[in-house]
Image (tube, rainbow, N blue to C red; front, side):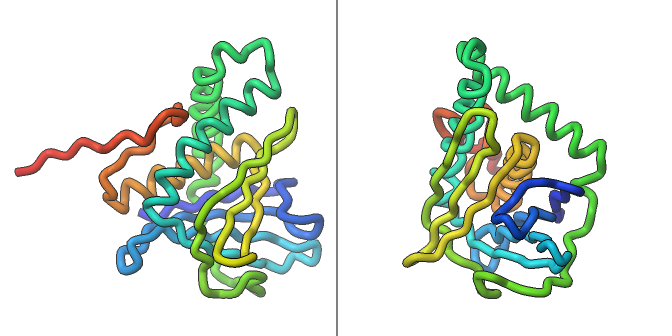
Length: 196
């Protein structure tokens, strides 16, 4: 099942000239990787897309760091609530996913008419990710590829939770033998399977 996250009228910028428009994560069986597609609208309303491959190894390392970033953001934004950071992050996730579903932003088809590919049409093999966190500021994740190739995405809290949901669904489709659970600060839990 294809799941796309759309956010209308979002001030979530990759740069000063582009606003995040849609995001999609799809497992590609022939590559045994997850294809990340992120589209941005420029000030002139052109649609640009950046593509990246996410491997099982990357996702296994990325997931706990996302959980830690969600909890750290709670501590930065609400220092007095740091003792309940995991619970607050989990409640924010549930609330954000409900809002996204109710608004229909998971149901909008991914727009395929892209005018430009700033990093090229061939997806970048993402090797690692760096998180940039500051109080009362959206989380910025820098996805690093081979050589000097990289791209940054700045996520509002709601969009980061939406990204988590997309990643959970893509990993489920990949059948990689792991289940992404929130809070995700300690480990990626192996999925349980019944063999007949």
